[in-house]
Structures are given as structure tokens and as C-alpha cells.
Length: 114
Length: 112
Image (cartoon, rainbow over all chains, first blue to last red):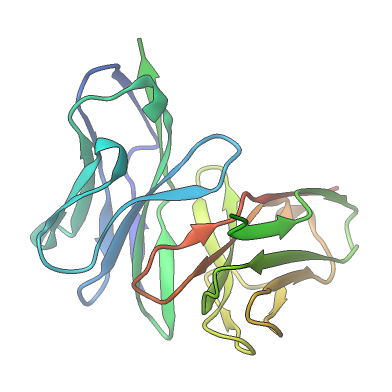
């Protein structure tokens, strides 16, 4: 079965600083990988996704993520964080395990300080 | 642009009561999902459907039932609510397996 681990429950960064959110997955084949963002009281919105090809994928709002098969990781990065980026971020892995499922990590809450 | 619509948005139930959460999508998506979100646990898949008339179990299906009688609707039922089912429930849909999942705004359920 596939699984996702987000090691950091919460992270605080200063506005303008760079950001990296960690995600590790477990899946026997090439996974479909996603990052979603959730603002308070809202549903989830897709930031970016990886299916195949270039391992560095660009997303919305200036985010990017890099797929590293050898490390089973799909870390999310942003060079300069804005206060509006404060939210909860979820990594997800999709794969066929007795039917296709998309499984989410526990999330990382990002706090941005002025 | 309605997208994925969930009703009700808020509900308080007594232990042992039953209820149904309704989800409707207007994007003609084949796949639909029900997740629950609890603090520190992220989103956990309850049940999902890969097309009209089909349902399948996710990670945490116990205590829930679902039906997909029409392509655009996916119903989540609680036959006998328990306090452990207090959660935020999200319905979602996608065109297929490799596509973006679109989420509703959530339904806050409290079981007392």
C-alpha cells in the first residue's frame, strides 16, 4: 500500500525567506505525486503534480517541487515566501493498490512571520 | 462555477443517530471520493467511486456507507453515529486517476 510522510508538523519562516517542505512516500512503482494547499476553513487546492518526465515541476503561486526517486521524496520549495502563503500544505501520492487511490500526508502548517 | 458542492455544511448529531452527507459535482467527473480530516492526521480516504454504480473502500471505511446512483452524486451515510466520527468531511472528484482532485468546501460534523 502507498503511504506519505510529512516529517514537519509545522514550520515558521520569515517573509521573504526561502521555504522547503519535506515529503517522503512509499510506493512500489512510479507514483503520481501531488502538493495541495489548504487555507483555513477551505477545501484543498492543487499546487502542482508529477506524473513522469522532468523531475522538477513548477506549480502555481511560485512553488516548485523535485521528485527524487532514490530518496523517495517530493519536497516543495519556494524561493521567497509571502505572508499569504501561510496555510496548511499536503503532499499526496496516487497509485494502484487494489484500485486507484490518492493518499494524503498529515500536512505541514506553515506560519509566516513579518 | 459550482464545482463540488457538499450539504450540509454543519451538523450536530447525537450518538446513535443516522445521517447522510450529500455531494454533487457538475464537472462530469468519473471519480468521486469522501475523505475525513482530523487534526494531525491529514486527510484519510473513507470510500471512493470510479464511476456510476461503483463504490470501493478506502483507508477508514468502518461505520460509513456510500452510494453512487448517479454520476454526479456521491452520498456518504452514517448509520449509527459515534463521537469518533466527529470530523470535517471533504468530498472530491476527478476526471480520472492521473488528474487533479477537486475538493468541496467541507462539512463539519459533531457527534455528541
